[in-house]
Image (cartoon, rainbow, N blue to C red; front, side, top):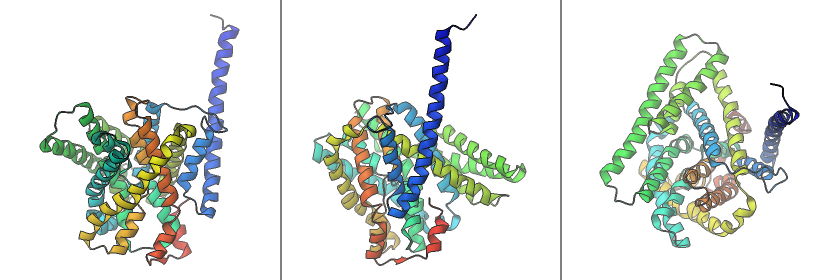
Length: 419
């Protein structure tokens, strides 16, 4: 059957659109890298720059790209966060776990719960929202962000005690699963208001966390065994680790356990295993991790329509101040003081509790069901994240000096490998 001019024009238009998407995505990537270099010189949080570029590319900016598809955003965000956590796991050494395992776990579980309750109560009091619905907001903003914490610590040039550095990095990798569990738990409570017993809540928690732990540790052990025995070339091994990591993440999610916990622990297992080409694999995941961060933050910026944010700015700033000055310090001191961290270390750990992509990603889990209803949640959380990155991310060095922590040598910053 001959192709008519209309079909030819339609096919040509689709090809042109695909080429424009490739060009636009590549240009945004180049601008992100250049903006990252500029932000380093200005001392600005690089992840905030990526968000700003995404907003400029969006429908209110010069780019004019309309994007409000929460389903595709959830897919992209899931993959990007999984890759970021895999990279974080690969960089988490056994010595870090020995130094910081228990305090980091306390912050990731108890600290997230305390933060969520404090912020939820503040949202309810400030807006008149029923407490259970307000807890959605608290659960979303409770986790610190692995990418943001690693970035500011790498660039702050602060000589921190090794246990404190380990706590901050391990906590940021462990607390995403707890926050996602709380979000899903609150959604279930709202949908089915029947009282949930302590036993059923505990069993749900154990199913998600222990299931994710078992899949992550088991998958990591099998992957390490395969890498030692298959004699793969280094480039093939890189792809194999990434593919198996995402497979374990997807399997855990399908089984109703925590895929984020699973892929983080898998990364720890591989990072602790001596493998041929291990440094090359680590370098590969440094690059892939930064690509995931750029894609994730650009996408989150695209999701936001700046003029829609204006009504949420005052309340968002108020909630951010509660989070930064009340909820996070309360959770940090409660969790760290029993492990003999002094008040200066606990105060600094409190101030480094940056929010980033994870809270925004968690906030559109409810929006998958009803994007219009949950616009307030998404917009409010976005404002809180921006305030956290600006206020805390820009002042880490000053806070460290004020608390009496010395400045690290310049080569310590270079070793961090932060863009």
